[in-house]
Amino acid sequence: TRILQAKAAEERAEKLEAKVQASAAQVEERRVAQRVQRQAVEARKRKQHETNVVHNRRVQDYRRAQTERALGAKDARVAQRQRERAESERDFQRLTAVRARQQDELLQELRAEARKAEALKAGPASAEGSR
View 1 (cartoon, rainbow, N blue to C red):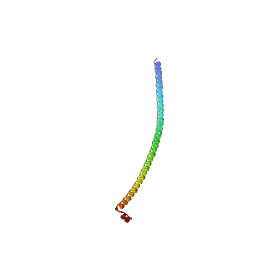
View 2: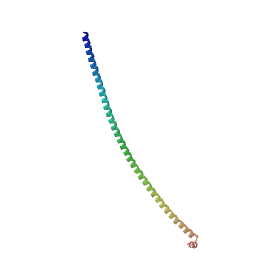
View 3: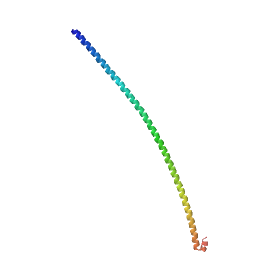
View 4: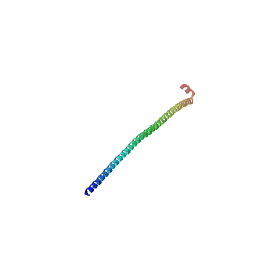
């Protein structure tokens, strides 16, 4: 009976050993599956990150181009305004010069008339003498 008990105990021990090995194999399989799953998640995250980086770069480039276009238009408007301002300044100076010339001519005419009047007051003889 001891031999049978020993054999039974040995069989139980072997079954237990087999169960332990099977559960160890299952644990290892689970670990491998989790690692594969983690790697897949990381790969997806990395791919999404790269996609986001590319997208963000495109958005930045687009916005920069928009800004440059807007600044170019603004520069063009500023330049146009400066041209108009310079043109109106030149017109104003021309007009001022014309007015000054007219005033000078008018002043000279008035002076000439004043001299004639002085000459007439002084007398016709002296007026003829001054000529």
